View: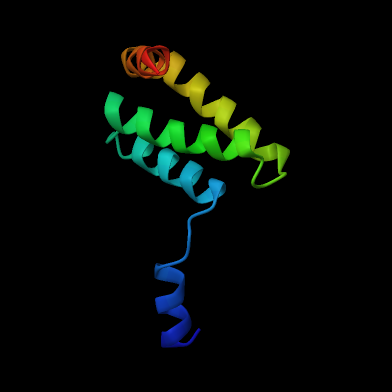
Length: 87
């Protein structure tokens, strides 16, 4: 890969898969809190609702991350749900 293509990669628009990967990475690093989870899940949900990418596996991964929060970080999930209800 050339240097110019490396720079282009840095500034490309993230895909829904990129956002899901970021969510997973932050979860693995134990860096997720309620506000960050709410922000990322809102972006991911908006992308999925707009059907930008017609990849059903993205919905599956999104649902899996919600389940991970439900089982391991219920307090964070409750903050996310409260944030959704306020909107």
